[in-house]
Image: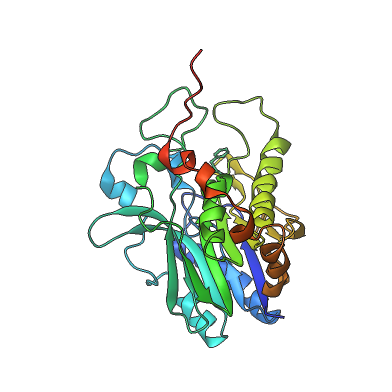
Length: 309
Ligand code: ING
């Protein structure tokens, strides 16, 4: 049994006016709970330090950059890293990354139990749009504020296993999981900020969003025989609702723990990484069953091209 006791630290809403210090105080309270339960790893959501700012149209890059972190850890997050190191618990958190050479990414990091950043992932699948869209009930300007990730879908040997990361919209694309699956991933940790309503389809039922949210992480876990830890920032941010539904999914695709509230909430589960072995050695033994000679279109073609009429 190679067990990781994982805490999914769902964050409730973060208002535009909330300071990073106020947010980190909430994150520390969840970390205290995780420490109290003897967790090995705590996972915080996408853009966990600020409100989901891509909902706001901004034209002044200096204003946009106030939502980004120039270093990690930094003054605001140092207390989080220090407490995690003191109690030997690994961290994964999402934040807006502004690199020294001026690049903007939607990033998730993973530390070891000594607080060293051992993994960095930059969101590849950016949903939404780059220019103001008056047709939408609200904006979703990730293509305006972030560049697509430039690190691919790496995995790292950490915490006694093989760990990978993803961010939000990435979880909707099977390629995300499969590229990591082809590297033997045993646990994928990811965060999300998912609007409760469809900005382009007001009549879409709310429970459909939650259905899709769980459908994609359960499928990804099952089809790659790995654990998926999926953590929400939830609740109403300046009038804009985000879904909750944080979940820990086992390698059979079964949700074994799920958040009940739309606020700050910790869900914990002992994830046995050896439980990934059976699927990887039988039904999803990629080496025995995959026929890559037929998969070419997946990397050769970006958009769908139907057959001629
Ligand atoms: N949010 C949403 C997500 O992928 C979205 C955007 C919602 C896309 C619903 C499609 C359908 O969960 C982020 N931040 O990617």
